[in-house]
Length: 334
Ligand code: ATP
Ligand code: LTN
Image (cartoon, rainbow, N blue to C red; front, side):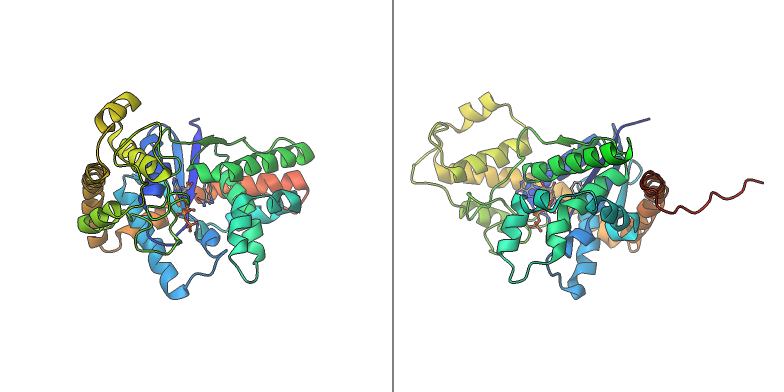
């Protein structure tokens, strides 16, 4: 049996080049070698308030973007998390084996809760639901960006604790990071991770941004007071631009270094902008084709849920049995 891959992305806004370089590019790349399930995690999105009038549309838009970046529904199941109720069901069972102290230590929880007036319990439970997404399908590999490594360690801790309390039930999931681009920083503030839900016109490059918007954002991005590229003394903004270039163009370190050393920042920015514009052009073209075909995205999502549902039911049944919960008797064979 092929190892299973699972990952997720929140429908919280327009997916950006950080999502793409940190995670989505790998999703598309490894789908042919593994049995892959990719989730649009709407139940995670509502851990911070989402406008109900917009959320539905964002889910479909994100699904179309995932198809446009190369997720192939013949090879991968594309699933909306809330359409498979076992995600939430397993999350409850895992909540019961998770010490609160583990959750309070999560850096994402600390950062997101600091920005809220009242902290919803969902924000604390967020990584338990993420562990449920992964363990529900017995995934062995989870391709994500660097910001999710702590959540994945927690998922393994939860799995281990469950296994030792109730017997071997879950596969241990491994974190899969890209070698370049695991953490893309905001263009306006290179000390902060690029994020869908951070406001500011110059912060992120959306995968659907028109070429001129991309050029403008990169030309205005924050650098430092040096005049030109010096790899030893480059500030965070310049390092971020070099990383974006390298992650799209896939040059080895030496080639990057010899090409850019001594280049003035204005020229560096122009070259980075053109690399991004030409890498996104085919994605945007496919997005236009996909969204022009009425009903296609909804059909892909339906099929995804239909494919994974028996796997989810099977794991939840095993977990119920392991915990001694009530499981309906198997139908009598004729
Ligand atoms: P939000 O702002 O709503 O928290 P986000 O932009 O952080 O959203 P997620 O939906 O949480 O994005 O993440 C989807 C995937 O993209 C994850 O695997 C995550 O690690 C990765 N990712 C997110 N931001 C970056 C980034 N700046 N650089 C690299 N990878 C990233
Ligand atoms: N928390 C993740 C999104 C996510 C996820 C998952 C990633 C939800 N469930 C399962 C990998 C596997 C984030 O990127 N913020």
